[in-house]
Image 1: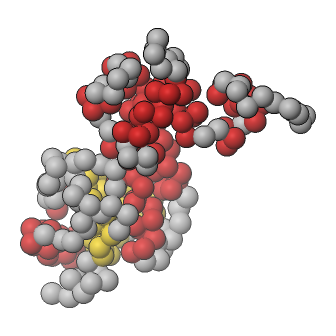
Image 2 (image 1 turned 135 degrees about the vertical axis):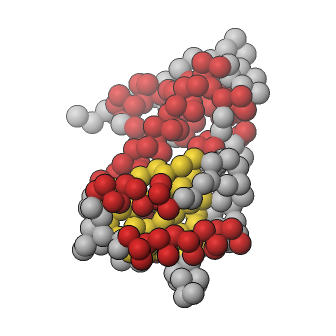
Length: 228
């Protein structure tokens, strides 16, 4: 059924009911998460303030923490928790959708595409493996460890453990750099050498180590760092 002459001043909930979520702006969608305004500011006004706080980039909200959002006038802990929870759910849904299809891994750019949106918003280093079968199709994705702002533990036991249990034939290792620069550190390179040695002993091929930055990535295999 087509709705004609719908007033532009309608509330976000009414717009969603009649037009669908795709017809709402970012601030209107966020207003539905915030739900209520204050005496001085409407829910949409608060949503606009939150988006402005994120430098007008809705994606940057994925990195926001509750304590940061409560610095915005009118955003208390309850509203901040709702926003953070919605952003986390969005990231998990993206991750689930991207890894649920048992697609064949062709190259490092495909790995980066699978993980970029999920990892580039993380404020701590996240270490992930993609476990592949003999046809190089993704069997599973495993979060190996969550580190601090500049490091995450990478022990062969943890990295290859899930692959061993699942009978995987190969592994792609990935982690993020919260600084946004995906250039590997000396420690990244040294740890990768140890993991390559371990992969030969275990008979599970380490195909690549991909480092994710802010919208960019670094493939150790592509850059020749697997040629030791």
